[in-house]
Figure 1 (cartoon, protein in one colour):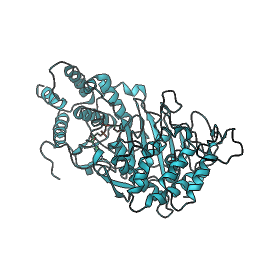
Figure 2 (cartoon, rainbow, N blue to C red):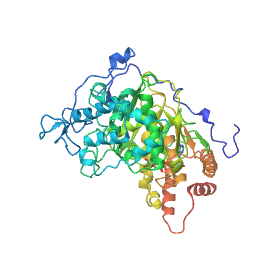
Figure 3 (cartoon, helix red, strand yellow):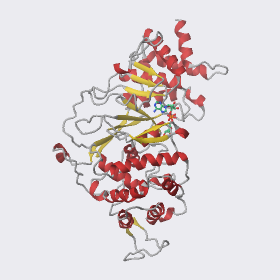
Figure 4 (cartoon, rainbow, N blue to C red):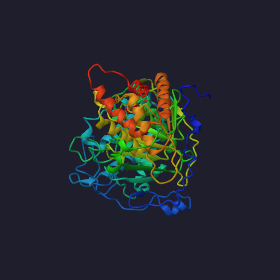
Length: 520
Ligand code: AR6
């Protein structure tokens, strides 16, 4: 690969540092006050993955579990016919209601869409009018191999294992409380099977005063209603995941870590004083973050409520990533909405599917064989960084230094090395520039500055945007030859933003930088 003249300063992809190249010594798997491990660490050191013992905690700082003894249904519902309970009026354990339904499903060889619907509504009676299940029979009808009807009982059986699979209480990853959770791929599948059957209590409403209003949704109810071609493609990806995870022969065994990070205030203030020059950059219009950049830290163009519209109709970069790596979806169970200076890093999720297209043209293509190696904690060497850009409903709002600072800190919070050991370089692209209306030139410069401050290289995938690719190479070349520092760039951005707010000034950032530099 020859470097064109303009791309002179850019590097090749293979000059960036990958995760397998980082010699990270983790040591024995251990838990701490800020790292909850849901598998038994002693068994793990003998290579066995066994759920960690523990007790249920029905508290505001832990996930309220469907199988918790404290989860009670006010009154068994009788509108679907007789419900067999000793006491027809007193409260009953909600898990007994759920497990009765799921056991009945799990016994079958095949279950109809209507039976799944009935079961779900039986323990969610107050949503009977609100939830629609029109899409479910259509997914099933289009499933020529009749896989889904045979899978429903298996997913029900998987969901029923919850009390044995997850015994230790799962802490919530709350706002401004950096902490991590490590759990097994099997535990994740069991939690997601429960999400599929909408068993999580207190999670069906997002009213402003609801207990979990600041959390993403987790129960899959929205996926079953308002049929669309998009949703039917999503459903294929999800069912494929369950097909693998309910098959003893194919189901993988490994761990996954979810880590919430928070940037300290002191670090967030120093952009103007930063004397670092730009670090390595590779720019290409071909390829995708999660494919060509798979071995780097992969940026998820996230929503502040992690996973965005994955369980509804959203289908852009983040949602597609979550569908190809469905284990990411479990982050929605415990990750409170990210604040401006927070991010989530996920290590070890597996890619189960491949796809083509984007948004309306998205198609589930089929199974993906993941061949990444595993680290000492048996986590796949895949690391994903969720950072949510600002959503600029009015694009002009982004030319404002408060907003620029916010985006710099958001990116830096994720890019910043953390554990004092080697870290891979970063795969990103038009972060915040699709659904969120960001200016690709401004966002590219912001990400370059954050990476420079963190001293990490960037692979920038422009996703078919040839013009941006060429212009970013030119601009980078210019900035590197000028030995421009992050602090100087910060002042340029300040100037540029005030100009951009003047009437009749429409110059793009790259052109502006080129002109100011040629005047020096
Ligand atoms: N690799 C590289 N670039 C990509 C890829 C990929 N796999 N996929 C898309 N792009 P967008 P945002 C490019 O709109 O603006 C979700 O609902 C492509 O050019 O997903 O940050 C989240 O949950 C695309 O236009 O990111 C948030 O709510 C551009 O990246 C919201 O969208 C931006 O992708 C975030 O929106």
